[in-house]
Image (cartoon, rainbow, N blue to C red; front, side, top):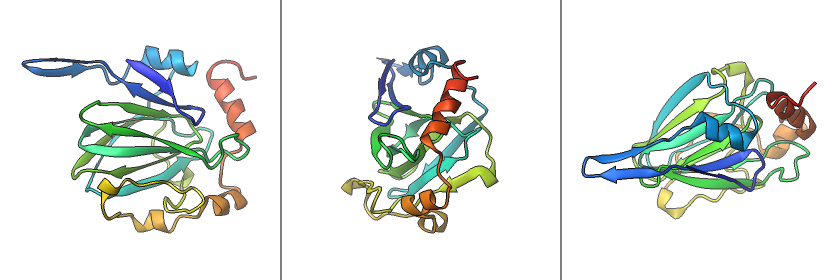
Length: 203
């Protein structure tokens, strides 16, 4: 597989090698050793999630308190989504910026997002099925959101998504500026210390 770092530090696009024959297709969609080489530390997986979404559904922007945080390894097993990584780490050189990866059942790419990054996606097809490997179990008090329609973040939703459908929880979430002002967002320096602890460089 090919692993490419995105424009947001701590996020990667993973493109598997697919082997097809008259029976179908085989691929490795997750390899802990190759990901460890890219990250500099192993990924401690603790939960796996699956969501199925109608076309136009937007999920996110979601993030979790660090530590422990929730790193995510995400792929689409059916249909297509445009997946976004948003830098919400206050003080980061790319704070407020985002990047995206098309996840579908054609190229079968995955995206990795480190702890402390925001995550969202929009479904481009009906029954878009997304599977997530995550580094911690769900902890409701530690889970937070940012409004995915925040004009300052300015996520670009492709026209093929059609009419957007969001949950009240996401539309009621604060803007990036509001979340920063309230102290809800992770701090870049603190996150760097946390990352260092994962690769054995911390105190």
